[in-house]
Structure formats: C-alpha cells, structure tokens
Image (tube, rainbow, N blue to C red; front, top):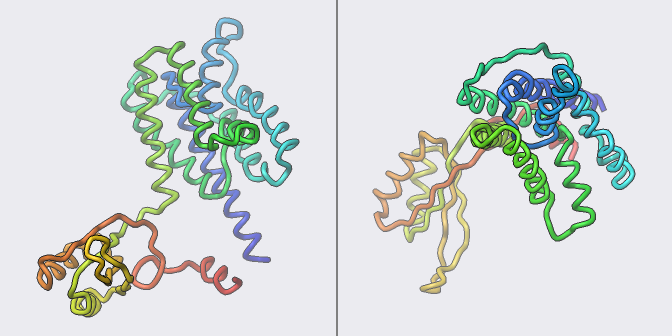
Length: 298
C-alpha cells in the first residue's frame, strides 16, 4: 500500500510538471506566433485571435480550454463512467491552471523556426511525461473516445487525427499557409519527443542471425561479448529445411563487434538488425526498486 500511494503521488507530480511544459509551449511560443497544432488548446489560440475584435486581448487560453473541455467531460462521465475520466481530469485542470498562471512572454518574436523546434520540444516533453503517468490533457482524445462509442469501425486514433485535422484547417483559414506548415513541423517534433520519453532514451540493437553455424556463433558471442543468445526454431519456406535463428540484444557499440564475429565465422550468414528501446535486465538498464517490488508482489 505504501508503494502504491508513493507511485500515485509520483504520477500526479509528473502530470503537473508535464502540463506545465505543455502550457509553456502554448502560452510562450505557439500563441504569440499563431501556430495551431490541433487539440483544444490549438483551437483556443484561434478563438483568442478571433475574439480580439469583441474583447480586448481576446478570450484567454485557459478560459477556452476549460469551456471546451467541461461539456466533453460531463458527456464522458455519463457515457463511460468515473473510472474513464480519472487522471485525465487532473491533467486538464492542471493545463488550464498553468495557462492562466504563466505570465505573457513572446519567445519566438516572429521566428517560425524557433517556434516550431522549441515549441515542439517543450510540448512533446510535457505530453510524454503526462502520457507516461497514464493521463492525457483531455481535448480531442476525449472527443475521439466518445465518437468511437458510436462509430466502432474507426479507431480512436483515426477519429482524433480527423478532429485535429479540422482544427488545423481552421487555423489555416485564419492564420494562413505559412503558420500551418510550421505547425506541422512542430507536431512532428512533439510526436517524436513524446515517443522518446515514453519508449526510453537508452537505445540498443537486436540482431536476428540466420546461419548454419549457429552453435559456433552463439558460443563466440557468449564468450566475447558476454551477452545472452537465444535460439529460435524456424523453417525455411523455400528449402523446407529446419533452421535455428539466433536472437541477441546488444548495445549500439557492440553491434559492430557482433557483425564482425558473424561474418568471420560464416560469411554467408543472414543478419537482421533492428532498434530496441528500454531494455530491462542484467547487462542493460537495471530494474528499479519499483520494478522489483511489482515483480515480488506479482
């Protein structure tokens, strides 16, 4: 129970930090230069600019974010229940809180390149921390989940992309093509950054080795690289012969040595190398205390 509460507190702290980074990206970078990258916060930038004709300074981002999310959360609570909302409610409230708290700052000062790069990095890092804590910032993903309840033949991701595309299209009509093109760059950078945080910073390499000299190669890899090797039973569909495919995970530096060993022993070997992330276990990233406690309680 102690570990459970500690883990929950940690997640909520990460959500608070993550939403703060997202708010910084929108309030300090996207909003001053009118980059609309989808989502309710992107739509809030459009509403703020349009409402300047009626209200001095326009409707603040945090007001629009709460106004758009409130009916969506009520609908989600009715349709999907309290459990579905959970941490996302906290994430949405915190994002609006930060948007209202942060002072007005114009970092890019008209530079779209700076806005796209650093805005994407900030937003991506914030979203990555929020997603890692099993939460979201509400908005279009919640809308997509509700629509998915009625339209089952489209996935939540597909519906969310469609809704975001509509918002980006609105931004195109209001702010023009240049702003929209840089917004697409910002979205790409944010997506890559959040994926990196979710999947881990420590990259390794996985090698599949198809060879007739699997015993010799496996023994050499075990002795030279001190890495575990797994033999997978396989059958060549062209020849019908039974094969033993070696599978080995090594660091980025060791993949060169692995290929040299394989080529030296069997120049005809077929090697497939792919990227892997967040390898847990002996010789790689060690299990944290939390991992061990979960494993012991399982």
